Image (cartoon, rainbow, N blue to C red; front, side, top):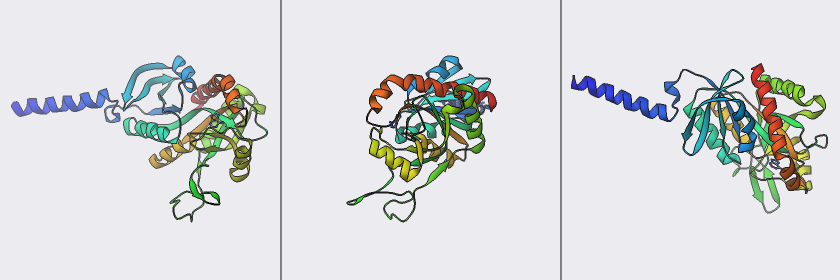
Length: 265
Ligand code: ADE
């Protein structure tokens, strides 16, 4: 009898720990993960979602519920590649995630794009990963110390990209939607000459600080992902001013597109 009670107590403790931390092993549900860098980039989604609980996992808030009839976990991971990698890893380690949508804002790089336009990433590249030599920066991935490998492009899921593109066209009109490469780095870009480099070296349409990080984590876990970015600025000398004026509206544009996208997945 004592053994039986001990086993029951142990099971209850394990269940309690797992449940309070949102442990995926205790749930049958599969979720679409929605990640952002900042609060304003998920604000509209959280207003519209039916949130059942908020799991606090190592300092990150994971909003668990439904949105457009889909099970979702929504989280703001923080700005930059490190915070994003950490936030995305916690998602995969704590929930059963079927696919990942990154929503947010970016700086426009292509001459064709305007502030508040949407860029859907077909692929992502880390523009700040490589070797710094006395004669300049060399873009590399793999083991940059050896410098014998070209940089990598990370490819978003084609089906999600096409659905996101169609959704964005429905929301903003075809003239305001682009798909192509987004360049990621741990820097807010506010420089015409660096914009030229991003265009010429990486063929980038936009730049931001998180996309490639979420891509790497999703690839490690073998899950499909897409990155949606509305432009708050043109990453030039006026970028800060433009960002202050347009960041919230741009963030809302991406949220509207996410809602359409969720209806289609
Ligand atoms: N996010 C929005 N604007 C950006 C910029 N100019 N550089 C990097 N990330 C951004």
